[in-house]
Image 1: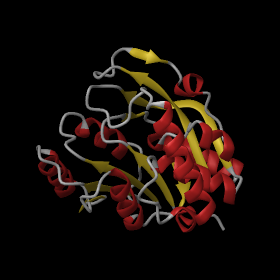
Image 2: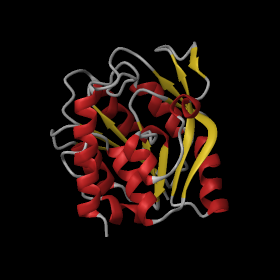
Image 3: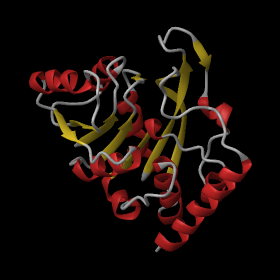
Length: 234
């Protein structure tokens, strides 16, 4: 069974296209878990209408404590043997799940991270053919502590990974970095699939962006992250 987790907040503009692309990828016995963190627009109404039409969709109320807490709550609710993370505003390629699951089977991977094609808000113009190339993406704990190349919307993992990554510390800034580095350290079975399997939409409301914090903030965040990794690693 596959679980897809989407965390939402004021996602009315793009959420329909994302949900439609996910549902085309998953089977009748799979599930789409959507944890909404108190949207003030029509996101909840949109989600409710989808849930009424498709039994695979479960909508839950997030804890109202920000993205990382919402991700953790959603992960704890997932029932599948494999968990795929998804943002509320991207579009999945039609064969994404099939290709990722093949990597799980063929490589015996614990975590799979695939590439993304970066587009404009309308998903019409390609801004980058490969996010991997832009970010120099690849596995390795030290590499990804220094410069994170894990992107949650491109990640999938076996459910047993949750034993290693939960709880997610409240003071780390990126849940995808936490999941990726923890799994690098514990399992050493992360695969980076060099094939774009989503359209990664860039627009004015993106939660993540391509800008950088000041050097001081970046050093502080890395020190906090390293401290948490060392204290939680076992």
